[in-house]
Amino acid sequence: MTPLVLLPGMMCDARLFGPQIAALGQRRALHLAALTEHATTADLARAVLAAAPPRFALAGLSMGGIIAIEIVHQAPERVERLALLDTNPRAELPEVQARRAPQMEKARTGHLRAVMRDEMKPNYLVESPDKQRILDLCMEMAMGLGPEVFVRQSLALRDRPDRQETLRGVTVPTLVLCGQEDQLCPVERHRLMHDLVPGSRLEILPGAAHLPTLEQPLATNAALARWLEE
Image (cartoon, rainbow, N blue to C red; front, side, top):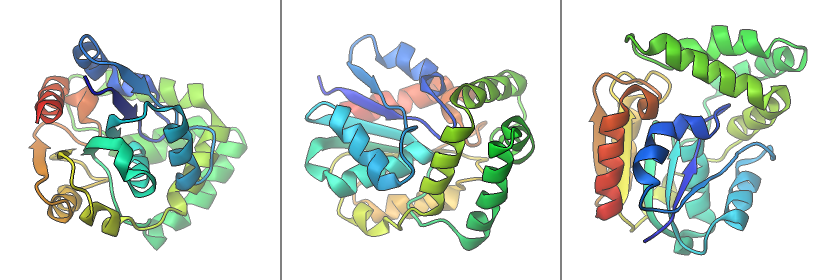
């Protein structure tokens, strides 16, 4: 059975995929990549490839999806199927790039918690009974990774290339999934990726925003299970 490589979003660790690990890891080898040691998307992709099995299914959320596309760009022959969750194939917009430097300076000077609380986390989730629990987990993951990882990941995201042409060449079974209320990577961005990848499947999950793996775990698990069996 094809192993599955999971790539987490910015300032997240394996706990972002906790429900998926529990559901899918019983029958399939899972490899959790840490996107923490490099400051370019190219170097992050190379590091994942160096540690990954020879061939694998690949799923990434948010920043993890960006690195997943970069992996396909570098080594398409190694990816047997692709899942892109709440992500973006485009280069970063200038107005988003402009916010990076002040955020990195705050993180460097001891204010990472404030950056996550005030500028990141408010955009992540829909209103739900689970919202505070998930927000608390996001903060735990971010503070566990720390300011140096925040800076490296911010640089990688700020300077990433546009990879829409890479998606045009994808021929493996591909799932494009997002939360219906995602403000960071909105639905229209996922319709674009769906259009770019021939034969891809688009799933939009109600009751979720940027982190459907935690907000709607059962629906996300079901979508990933269908994709893995295609």
